[in-house]
Image (cartoon, rainbow over all chains, first blue to last red; front, top):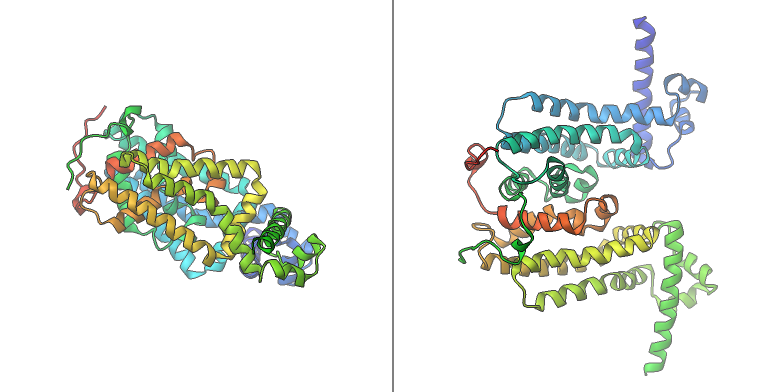
Length: 212
Length: 212
């Protein structure tokens, strides 16, 4: 039955745009289905034909937010490319999208972040999926000889701590001036060159460096 | 006239504790001097004897928040220590303090962050001072031969992007499980080993690595 499916889709689309208008103006914290019904000039029970509850609405909105980002990653993972470049692209391609979204509509971006914080159970799957793909790229880099002596899990968490301003949208909002592609390239190069297991004596006895 | 000074200090101290009670419970966003007067059982004009306005109250609260952190840094900067260790300690010593504060009272910690966001002009001086000291430690590391080919300003901003989960208290709240001293040590070692200027061809032609 394609017809009713389409009507439901069209109604959902319209309600999502209204939900965006509401959260853009008032933030996502106090947003309710009652507000949405009022904005849409619908009865609440009519809104529930399209979304079972606020959780389901948040889930659909998160799905739209992540769709392009996950598609970029899935495309990248299948592309033949040196692991070094792939690791850079993994962050750079999504950085471009997120920055464009922020610049296009900072209030809506901020409200989407709030919505995500409130419905983290919905976000978690996408975060885990992203980490899974990052791990597969880092494993390729390990096969190419990087991260000597470290386990993949350790590499994943260490890389995660060093790239936050380039991938965490909450932080990006405040660090947009620092989180550009040039610095990302430097950070990825630093990680590839410097991240490896070392014994505890290292910080007491650093490798010999020539003073300049 | 030490006596009135002391009375003013004692009154301020009491009001600050009340302000903390209020922001811990209700957050810092809607906090007003009227709330503070009500909580203290004082007239508003009486509260103004101690704090000219909410900005001055926020300034005093920020001063208390940063006092210990800045003292740690000033002590460290004057200590004779290899630059590698000093850079690690610069973050590690404050990480310990901030984590302890968070664990002792997460709601108050979160509310202090909100207060800081609302009064960023007050915070900026402390952030700039911290960056200034970090730059002096990074300059010592450069004299020891690290960060070859890079300017100090570039090093400061790159290091800032790579250590966020260990120094940005807003991010620490969400990344406490990752931001421990072991990972900090790894990140600092990675920065010292890997951060240097390189030409654009690097990511296309990585240094030879032995596959394992």
